[in-house]
Length: 235
Ligand code: URA
Image 1 (tube, rainbow, N blue to C red):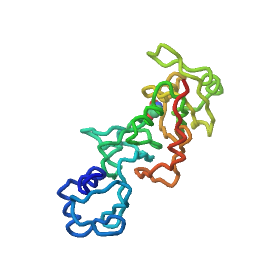
Image 2 (image 1 turned 90 degrees about the horizontal axis):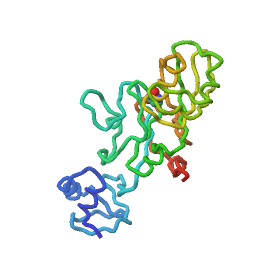
Image 3 (image 1 turned 180 degrees about the vertical axis):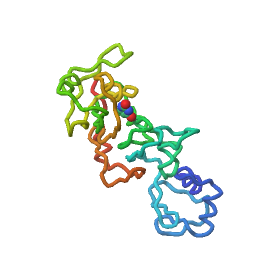
Image 4 (image 1 turned 45 degrees about the horizontal axis):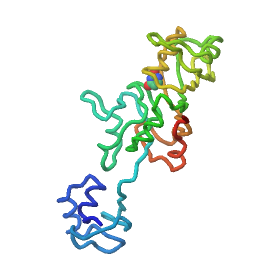
């Protein structure tokens, strides 16, 4: 059993003093009964509400953000706004980015406070496929699909990339599916083919597809099925 004020302040970003004030003004309920004081004991099985909104304690959180251009995939940055600046949640300092995108890349960015889940997605052993819509500077030539399938060799790397698959959309646009997440990987892959990336948009990570209803800068919680779709890597 935990003191009510400590419980609420752990589960939210409210200080103990702020919690006491909510209790004093009758804005906290425990199973629909007004809380009396901060010293009351709770087990965590109760439904505790502040101003009518239920709080939950220490459950892992998972979000998808439709990342706009100009935002960095970092928790802090002194020059640019960060992906976490767009996430309005309690305890946002506990959130981490699962698989970064470059500042100019848009689309699906996953954010969580579950370190193990993040590791499953981003570990080099994970074979989680990522799909990008790639707009190229010059028209695609017929040899691209085969070269990508054979594994292109990036400048400065000791090994070629894992096989990648490509679906052509028009003369300058492809959907590219890759399993790795090397630094600037997609841009470097097309540079190795003598082209350059004009725009890059991530549409999918594993079984998680960017929700089309999210405007750039908007986010939503993942469904349980989306969270569960990221499996532990096979040994
Ligand atoms: N590959 C890149 O080059 N940039 C990204 O943001 C993601 C993958």
